[in-house]
Image (cartoon, rainbow, N blue to C red; front, side, top):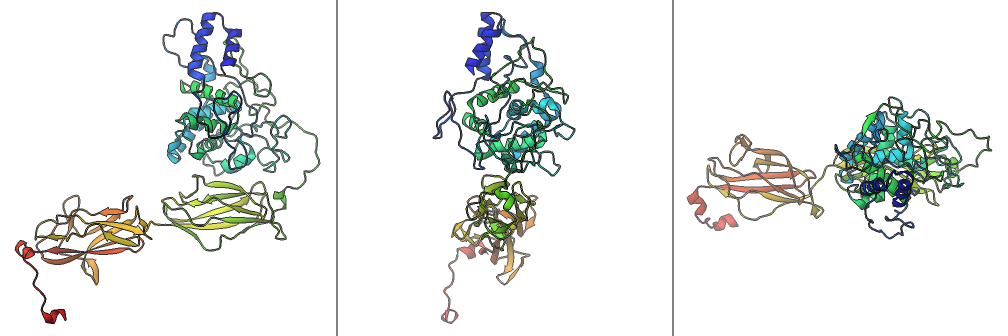
Length: 570
């Protein structure tokens, strides 16, 4: 990027002093950071950050390396200090800092949702804005309706291998209108095969539409936050951006806009935002507007995300040969079984879902993408935190879904299956998350629990819960002072607990073991009744422990117990 900046300043700077100051300002505010960690793959020539490996979904990145806008932000901050240094550029670039209102709202709503669903990602909305600027000029200057849907499709060129990647049709033209090759779609320029698993419903209308800025911004956020990348670290930020478009120039450009937007933005009415003028495949590389440049409001034809509303008319072509997806008649279970998938809250499901694609005659169909979707009131996910996974079938026509991970919500939910780009009868699977359970309870101390009438027990009762020998954490429990071993009703005399107001309580509910499986009960007190009393602790899963509590006068408790008579022991 430094070379591009230098060339630009040599051409446009009025004086050597201004040029030097501008280089220093832009180098400090826009240049990417130091080299990130190398994860074993060579970086591109001249790059300072390694290129990430291809994603598990089958494409190298979100956009298929489609072209993008290359215009750089202005040389100075949109919100300069009140007294700028003499000799520095003075143009504020307000048009560049303005983001159409609905588009800006979509970026901020996506950040808020990710802050809750993936707090460790630390995604700033300015990163979505930077990518949205580079990919589509913020939906061609905010040409969206009241719901955030673009006024006409935003399409990149068809990825037919002619100067671009070769990606044959994966969606039967559902998203891009092209049944032969894929094209990047929408304000965030997702290719259909990536949208099939990364798409999100960001505006709550019940569907995921790549042409809707709310849906596309939320999908981009989840895409960037996968693989546990942390946007607050250089390594995580760079890896995420490169996974969106595998180019060092793209990384530098997005980082420049990210830094620019972090220094200040403002909203402008929808449809009035500026549209960039140059793209990565027109030979012009990076550009920036000078104060004297006239504003350009008409998108350049053919621009990905800034081109025409609909694809260029094409002469009729012969029908494409049937794809493997076209031959699929239905999906069948492939060994998962008809019994319910069950896991305890917080645990991984032991069994994975396996589904087979078949023709009408029952023959297996390989190389078909099957989409697995978790539905229902649940916080269960596939490993990695996603609720949608797309897996290609193997030579036997079988797709094995990622392992399911139970959340904390108990109950039943479904996993639906579908063939990407082709409507056929799928298979629905039912899964159940049960409450955390324990099968064993044991005291952590063998010290006898004794007390004098009207006093308090010196030791608190602490127990440890386990399940199949492992620590049973976050297990619900109840403690009750019962009448006898055969009568589990609450006792009306003897030891007791106190509530927050100091009142007598002999049953405790809503107890829970900690992360070590331990449960420590509150302090116990004794009334005037003497004798041996019982405390019973039960947990979800059936574990039960009965603890003896003895209340005796001080002199009696100090006396040795009488030896049993021969008749009593026989």
